[in-house]
Image 1: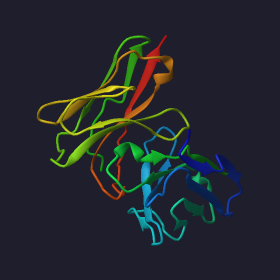
Image 2: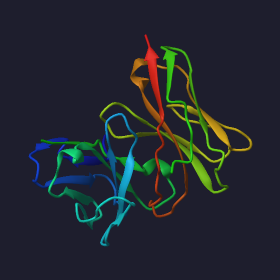
Image 3: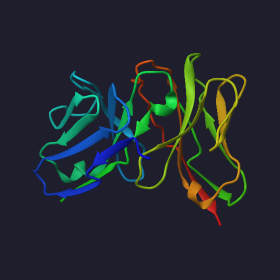
Length: 117
Length: 113
């Protein structure tokens, strides 16, 4: 069964509104969570990395005030797209990491498709 | 920047072995080779990883050259459900689960009936 869930799986919103995407680790404590964005027919682009209880680290070119990340617990991280515009329409995917050297525990969520009208 | 190069697309007949190559000529000694795949509109799925020895699991085999500058993912008996984009990634072991994984463009594998 899935070990990482995302909610919602798809969302359509009007331009200017804010959208919150949740990423939950179901079976283990996620010390680190990563957020990726994927435009159609393109690869995954890392947006930011967050560790539980601390501020997220954003990749170059990603606006931290537009993409708010909260990682308040070891099982939940949220990405809020503030004042969304059509160019923010994309597939957003989280990835969770846990302590230890088992590389197959780097699980990805199923993704959230955001469409901004 | 991605540290790997892969062919953009490949076709494979159903039931045959699919061999997906990857070049990672700048790989460093403490970096592993990971393979993930992404089926349309889903999150990436882990397949296999290795350091220098060949690896096999229930999904695939990974062959890494002796100089570690390239590798090949082998799906022994491809099925239509193996149609996906396959990503080869290099990255270090991290005891804290916080290693960044940088995705390249991947190979779009199409299994032909």
